[in-house]
Length: 112
Length: 110
Image (cartoon, rainbow over all chains, first blue to last red; front, side, top):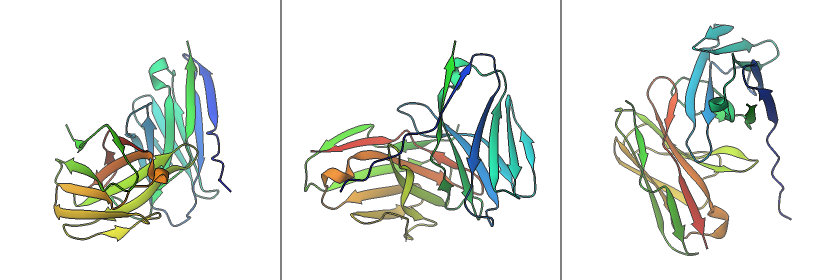
């Protein structure tokens, strides 16, 4: 029979609040991780990356945390704005520039 | 500004037609990728290429082929389109770090 796709996890936050999006990655040997943002009808857009020799990296309003012990990645967005509404994907790879393994994505909805 | 462009944003084809999706990048990247994206299934890798004239199968290559005759151009070919190939197709390129994505082509096969 036909397989049924899963619904995306959804996170709904109030404008101005902080958002935390989580991702469990699959391969303990993965060396490089990326967060992408995808707005409706557009291709994924790079937000921030982190290498496996780091556990935290900060960008403008965003922070990525890496916990290799439990294979967990998180994206924190400070002072969330309506323009942050999108689907967020984590991705992992064994070698930078190479083949990526993507997570399922989380839909972030920001209420004004 | 880095750029990955795809030949069409929307495309409608009939079952059995041969379909060409073109992707061009202007960043002199070695690596190029084709994905399809379906609701609930995320991004799935169809084919990728690490150099001109080189290609490798991704996770779902069946029903597709690719061509990389020039470094900046990576083409995805559907030899005989079928309705289950209706999807959003995304092209990406990378150098040493992150992949940059094109805007996508939404293909409908009737």
